[in-house]
Image 1 (cartoon, protein in one colour):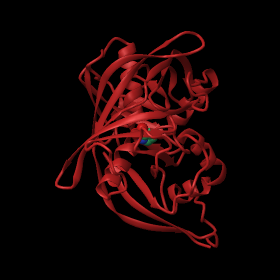
Image 2 (image 1 turned 45 degrees about the vertical axis):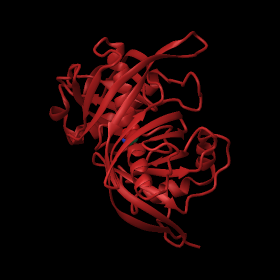
Image 3 (image 1 turned 90 degrees about the vertical axis):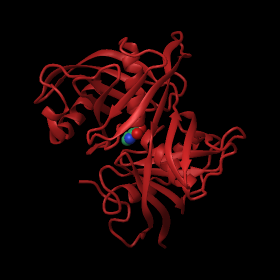
Length: 334
Ligand code: PYC
């Protein structure tokens, strides 16, 4: 039997977002974190079928919006993407919220504001509308913090690098210009795609971060290449995710991780606003809203609350079916 999914497709700052509005599975679990694990256990074929070729591509990502699991939220999000179900996705949230509001799939209790549950925790949304279009979405993200500094690795073909690991909803290896890495345009997209898996593998061999509050969130999944000429006003980055993707957006969780990183380095402080540009020069605005502490067995960990603002555009409706008779029904990657 064919499984049919009604989707609203679009992009946030150039990176794809597929809101699966019809055909989403009923999930077990009291929280979105538990539902994520249930989805991965029983329904991961939906993610691979909708994100991998031939129905998707290397950068494909999106998600489902579920009714709230708790009284104080407007709904819950489950993210899907080529690498799995992320605990949090910033560009995904901006797109999913935009399309859902514009099509009446999310009904806020308070105009201009939403409280949503994602697997990584609770997030607040402030959005602006004009003539029935959502023109901007700002996320108050889960707390971001620096998990490790000075991780020394040797990348075949590139040489030695010292990187830091920072969390912004996912764990990022952050590579700043040094040694043979002199900046994004010098390295270029092909070599970012070639070296990023090697950086991730080398960092994973040395350090395995585990979230102090939720141990189901662990491990370095993304690599953020910071461009040269970063100042306290802004910078450019390229985020690598999955196995073959450079984020076309400035990456919401990557921007959050970078804000925590720049606060840790003394470049930014609470209240600062930071423009973050992507590989294709699209933009998010990040703000360090406040300083907080995350409880841990080894004492409190300094963290920040990041605000990430951007916008998204829908490009059309897409009714997609997954037919078990199709040899590629669950997708493939090359
Ligand atoms: O915007 O957080 C993000 C994101 C994660 C992976 C791709 N984009």
